[in-house]
Image 1 (tube, rainbow, N blue to C red):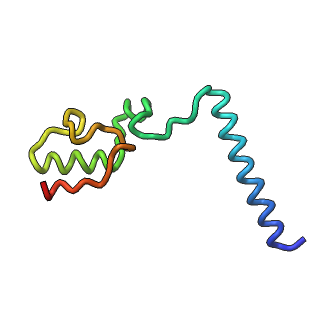
Image 2: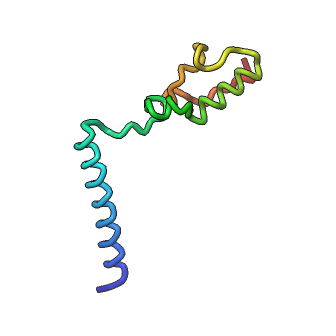
Length: 89
């Protein structure tokens, strides 16, 4: 067998292994893995926040405004965070 063929077979096997492992994890837990920082309760308990939320909080503190948890400008969800330029407001 050629080297390229062996590499392709190994790559397919590794991808298949991880897909099976993720499927088993989802079947055992009964729900998808919560990888979103803002919705994962274990990360919230530890006080872990997404980088965009931390940046927004730092920018709001620098402007003398309330933090993201109570401010309507940032609702704490990383999926909702976008690049907002606070310097031009």
